[in-house]
Length: 108
Image 1: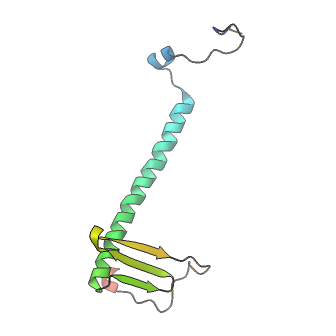
Image 2 (image 1 turned 90 degrees about the vertical axis):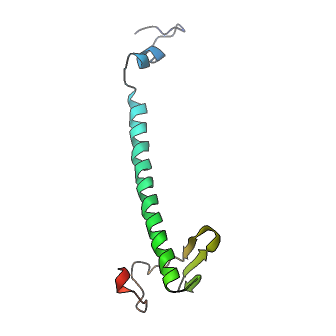
Image 3 (image 1 turned 60 degrees about the vertical axis):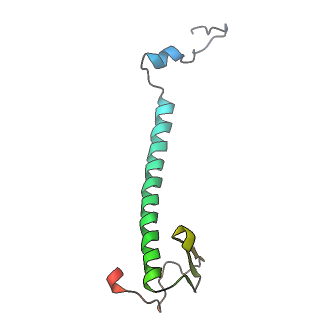
C-alpha cells in the first residue's frame, strides 16, 4: 500500500492536482447531476404555478370577486401585488370533484 504524506499506510486522497489534470471526482459529479435534475423540476413547477395563478386571477376578475370561500377552498385577491392567495383544506375525498361545482366551459 502506498504511504500517505502523514506517514500512514492507505490510499492517498485525490489532490488539487487531480482536478487540474481533469480527473473526475465521481461523487461530486453525481451530486451535481442530482441537484440539476431537481432544480430543473422546480423551475418547471414554478412556471406551471405562475401560469395557473395568472389564470386564477383572471377568473376572479371575470367573476367580479375579490374573495371566494366555499367547501374548504379559499381564494383572496391581493390587490397591491396583483396576485391571489389560495388555501384548500385537504380531505379524504380530494380525488373526487364536488358534484355541485359550476364550471365555465370556455375556460377549460
